[in-house]
Length: 162
Ligand code: FES
Image (cartoon, rainbow, N blue to C red):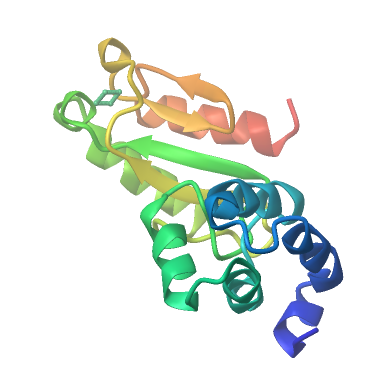
């Protein structure tokens, strides 16, 4: 186990077990990455070369797949992923201001996670509910017709455990 994996509590032995089940099965790369992420919460960088070697791939091929899929993470994520929509419908109805307020509230930028691992902030191209623009999603809950007052209410409620 590498020093950084130990620090983050990553069980590389557990990851090796998952990798062993897919020895020499190149087609299994994506399902394996999904399985590791489901189990660990992200794909630890230490796992890349192990996966590549077991599947008969180059590490750069594994990294390429990980970076292609935005749903695969290489860093630990917060318990709640906040996705602010940057699509056109949301943009013209104040999405930019919503993003700015969420950033201020969480004290992080896009792609970052709060130090307590409570929230990770992302932006998305379109959530698919443009009629409710502007929108934001926290975990599996979508908040539509968001405005500055509503942003404050959403996070105050969540932070107080309501
Ligand atoms: S543009 Fe925001 S939901 Fe479609």
